[in-house]
Image (cartoon, rainbow, N blue to C red; front, side, top):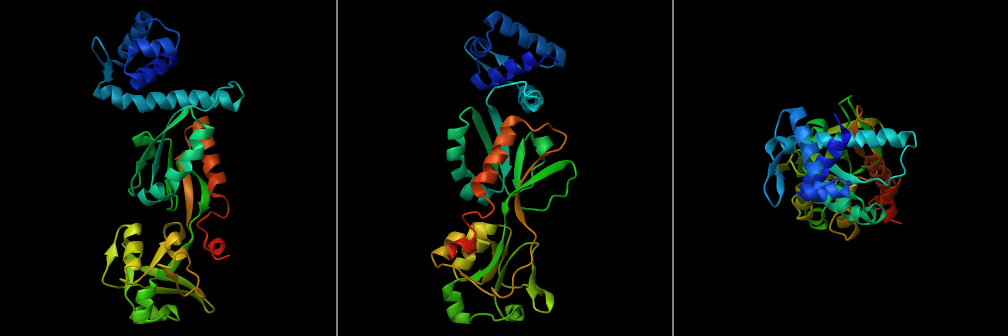
Length: 302
């Protein structure tokens, strides 16, 4: 399949105009229209709805677009791997990320990223559902869950330390637990599926079955419920650090560290050459967050 046709199709999808897309690639309107006609003929489907003023993608065109972009990205990555191109990273980067982390940390990070790479556009999907990267046509996913799919590659972006905390009002009313066993006499706010809390003690690992009046499937919800004095909970430091910093939440049982092997990961398909736009995005986030990110509680306490 002719990659020039694919590049033209991608530009048409972007500008919704065959003449404008063709002009960007040095093609006359007639030649550009002929190239798209040949591409549709090769595929055996209609990719565009054409009118006298503009064009729009058909349902098949929408389905084909991310695959066309992946092909072009792979070609550019192959060229970049052998130094065959001096072009700056460009194109649309499709990113999936957890909703809370995306709002709190990815969106602020994009300001400097766009200044460094103005030719890259980002389509950001925020969802707490694990997205199928290949099926959804995503270039990269940000995850804080263990990697189970062997067809994916993961690169660590930042640590994801967990903290046990409560509000000052709750602790004033019900007291400070002194050991993990004391949690059995407290209201514990739990994230659905994570009711077993594990601690490191002087005698080894201890697991507590956390119970209380409230369970939820959302990390921001358990944090906010904790701020409102509904009980004790575990939260990621990246989610709770501002509330700890301003005194709305207080870390507890700090002599009994939580046992968790979690981190923030950038995940991408192993079968795909790493396109320059993906590589620079991952490198940027690694540098932006650093080994000790700004939400690190040890840094905040200094």
